[in-house]
Structures are given as structure tokens and as C-alpha cells.
Length: 150
Image (cartoon, rainbow, N blue to C red; front, top):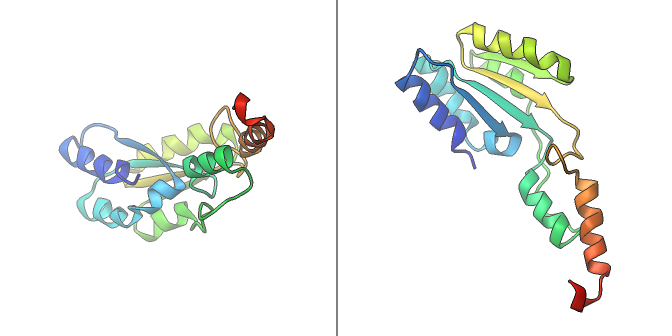
């Protein structure tokens, strides 16, 4: 976790003529968000798409699967990632509805600046096919099974 953004900066510096896009979860991005200053300082106009659901999603998924309802240390207190990008001197966009993604992404790519496109997601969503509620329900159902059937 956290490797994608610095790697994207390096890729952009190596290939300044190519678009470089990093896809990161909110927890992942927070691990190296300070490198935004590096991107600005060196003119590495990467675009970071931040999937913001307010938690370490994969860790939470494993917690709910194995220990439904027993959550520890996975909720995040996130900044406004788009405002943070602007504070560093970059471009920042917030997307709360699917139809807004295309125009936000086009603006980020056209800006010529390091950019964040923050996707504000439903906190219950873990992946495109699974929600926390579903994973927790499945974990509870497994716990209710007799040990021989698990």
C-alpha cells in the first residue's frame, strides 16, 4: 500500500509525454500523499484517482469476514483530497456522481498539473460487487454454521 503514487510520479518523470494515472484507495493514498509536493516541485503532472470510502477497505473486509462486527483501526479521518491537491499547487476535483467523472477526469488531464480526482463513495461499498453489509452477513452466517460444516 502506498507504492502507486510515488511510482506514478517516477513514471511521469521518465515519460513526461505520456499520461500517467494512479488509482488508489483513500488509505493507500494517505500513506504517501506528502509526495504531492515532489510531483509539483518536479512538474510531474500525474492524475491520482482516489477511491474514498473512508476506510482501509481490504483490511475491513477481512475483519468482517472472519470476525463480523469486531472492527479495529480501519476507519479513516480523511482530508478533502481535492482541496489538499490545490493547497499543494495542483489540480483537485471531487466526483460524487458517476456522470461527473468524465468531465472531472478531462479537466485533470488538461490541467498540466499534478491532479487528484477524488471519488466520494458510499462507505458501505468495498468493491464493485461487495458491500460491508454483505460481507458481514456472510461472516455471521458462517459463524452460525456447525464447526463441521465450516
